[in-house]
Structure formats: structure tokens, C-alpha cells
Image (cartoon, rainbow, N blue to C red; front, side, top):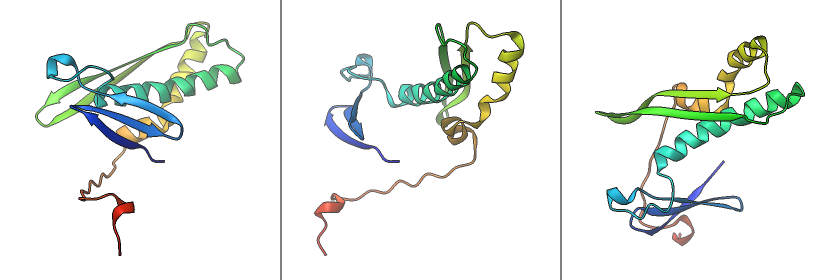
Length: 137
């Protein structure tokens, strides 16, 4: 899985994956143009999308309509160290019985994005002065 980001101007980037494009920016009050979500908002959207797709699949497999399905994601912003913490995901899934709601709740910990946030992980950041295709042997 790979995504490429190209700087446009200021704090604005365009992210590309397969044939899709997404604008990333910062709010105007931070001196940017507010033409897209912030990276932190995209992280929350990614988490909510992962959970939402899992719930939609759960509903489809049980022939329960997904009408009214909603996912809300929140996180607290910690300043020292700067990070997001205490993620909260709230799912509104109309039409489920209390038993189905509890079963769904118990099965939601196995998603790809949730695991990336909750499990021990690693991150390697490297910096180069040229694009890989520009390097000549």
C-alpha cells in the first residue's frame, strides 16, 4: 500500500493513491488556505471509514439495512508530546437489536486502521535531496 503527496503551495498538498486525489491543508487561522482536511482529521476519517466499512459489512451479512448508519470519531490533542490520544468511535446503527449491538461491539477490534493505532508499531522517516528516478548510478 502506498500513497504519494505532492506539495502545491503553503501547507497544501495533494495526496494520490491509485486514481484518487485528496487535498490536504491547514485552517485559515493557521495561515493556510483551508482547502482540505488536516492530516489529523484525515487520520480520524481513516479510522472512522475503517470502522464504518466493517459495520456496513456486518449489517449486509445479516440482511439489516444500513440506512441511518453513522460513525463519529474524536480524539484529544496532547501538546507535550504533540500527539492525538484517547480515540473515541461512536457508531449509530439503527435497526439492530440489543443483542446484535453487543455482538457488533465485541467484534470491532480487528480492523486494519484500529490495529495500526493501537498496536506497537514502527515508523521510519528518511530524507533525500532527489527523487529515486532522478538518481543515476
